[in-house]
Each structure stands twice: as C-alpha cells, then as structure tokens.
Amino acid sequence: MAWTWRFETADGAETTPAVEPEEFTTQGDAESWIGEYWRELLEGGAERVRLSDDNGLELYAMSLREALN
Image (cartoon, rainbow, N blue to C red; front, side, top):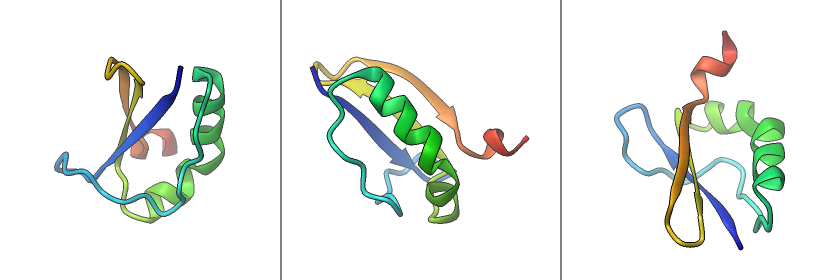
C-alpha cells in the first residue's frame, strides 16, 4: 500500500510542496516525513496537509500552522 500527502493553501487549493515527498510504503513513514519537513512546507506556502492511502481513502487532514502553537 502507498501513502500520499496532499498539500493545500489556507483556502484549500492544492499547492506544490516546497519539499518533494518520497513514496511512502507505510503510514508511519509518511507521518515521520511530515514531522521532519512540516516547517519547510509551511514556509513554502502549504498550510494544510491530507494523508490518503492508495485506494483514495483520506485518513485525516491537519493544519501545519497549528503545529507552531
């Protein structure tokens, strides 16, 4: 199974991430990656991210800005 992140601006529009994600084979790998790069992604214009599996099932969405608090 593959896991992918969708990157969005504050208004919900999809955006290109400042750091290109790799291909993730586990949910844990995807979550570890976002934990490592969330600051660079936020500085590059991504405000929110959504994690989905390769079946298109969205697991959750979260705000990168809230991670600052």
